[in-house]
Image (tube, rainbow, N blue to C red; front, side, top):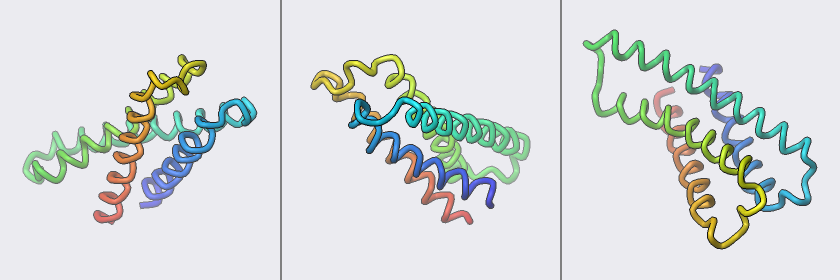
Length: 129
């Protein structure tokens, strides 16, 4: 339980700080702080992709216990939230100069959907615990 509960809680906190505090005020916060937040977020996203890959492998090999609706939704959200975090970080890394332009509204919408997926995944994880 602690191998999932603690990292997902940390991932929510780090992503919230990164997306709500650092990204809107990126000119006021030191680069080293941004690098640390992005590295922690990247490592946690990679960790969850590995965990979900192992779980998916177990689900595929144990077809008799496969609950299509519950397991499929949790598996999709399990992969989707870390992948969306990596996509958000990638766009932010390569487009830092123009993310505050009105034309970049899609980026902030992507960040909002990423946060939504993270929270849904967290709630589903708490339900299963």
